[in-house]
Length: 394
Image 1: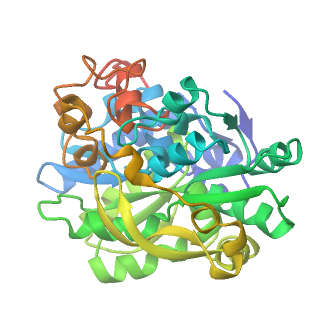
Image 2: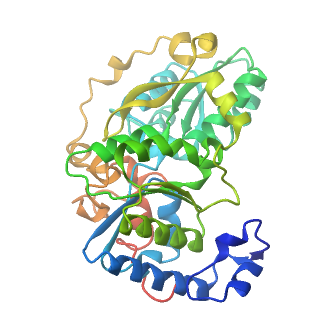
Image 3: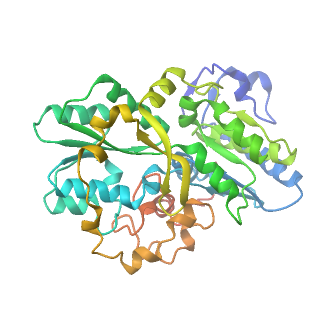
């Protein structure tokens, strides 16, 4: 367990511990403080006097930590913590994957992040296209796409995916100037609008949201204030260590108990109210929000990020003819049609509700996008033993 001096000692206070000891240092995985938070979470949930209390986190990294550290096994029986649409690979829509596949089959080099390669499109994935001889390159950062383009005279397309954090990196390389043979195929997504969809979805039972700390480092916590004002649901920004998540849930249940819809930043060592203003300036200089479908969920107004008109010369959708109909002769398989990834990402179902889970659909042979990405609910639950309830101490 690592320990570091906290720039925000108030964040280290844990109910039931000595204040002076708690503020002296922040141990992100301290079992004593974890147990104190678990006990506090149980008390706060019981104080509501009803069950279940349902909250949603919208980040695959939160689900990874919850599963990896067995945190779900410590939740009180009356608390239901749902994973929402927080996996950018999972919600990349089928036609967006198809665009990359069509370009690859036309001989264009495709550079993209690793998880995207195996995500199914209408009839094939980028991995399938690669097996046919297409030039698919796995990269780990936007600047690597620039390096790839500079190493060849062929046309290169950066199939850019991810939420605000990776969109800012794409914006930075665009503003830095691209090689003439490099284009951008943007499938970037913007998180706040999809929270609106979930809150308004018929049958939703979500009473509060745990927001992703890394996206909020860019946007700031204030980005959630209009949402809270409209829907009267609390939002707590949380980090990704066990104590971050537990403390965030304690605060979120407190707000639900007290019927106090507000935004609370429980990750102040990284997140401010206003966020990274320089990054925001670059993000909105390059991209514009537009409506579009998120795979399996719905049309999300302003949920997609597309290049602004002044960058049309590097926009792959304008630079190339992309004939998606060339893939549509192949109907989706019956297994694909049975996939319930959309309901899982909307918080209406769990991975184990799917009849394909762990049987026809595995990480080795994924049917749906949720089983592909390391941030996908199905892959996380499969990796950590189906329902990630590991038992034992935190």
